[in-house]
Length: 150
Ligand SMILES: [Zn+2]
Ligand SMILES: [Zn+2]
Image (cartoon, rainbow, N blue to C red):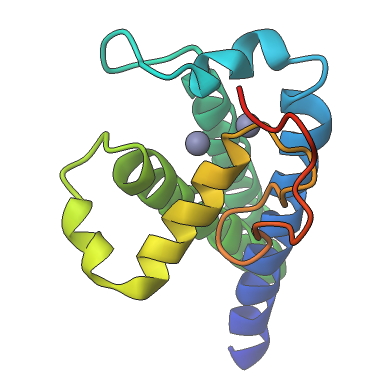
């Protein structure tokens, strides 16, 4: 059981790097036409094109979970649980709290959430030297790139 918990935690941690990696290379690369909707100053209505990424990730995470349960592979199920937990927390903290899509501004009472918000919003300045993660792989670089504002 402890091993399964560790697998779930490892999957969660790896997701931060995976999310940062595809965010940087793919979203800000070939799929920029979709992700750009997230970098606009103002959203028109509640949804944005970028939300297809949320749905795609939810489907992938569920796929891992269902495969683990179907083929009775506890390790895979644990990994799927870690990935799913990451996705849910990402959506709640990133879209809900940081971008104000859910009534979660009270989270800003805690320094931890305020710094997550500030570091993520730094990414929104367009500086490619920013880390592209959300929970811990996210920092404001000590030497911001020039012209880092969009
Ligand atoms: Zn981005
Ligand atoms: Zn954002």
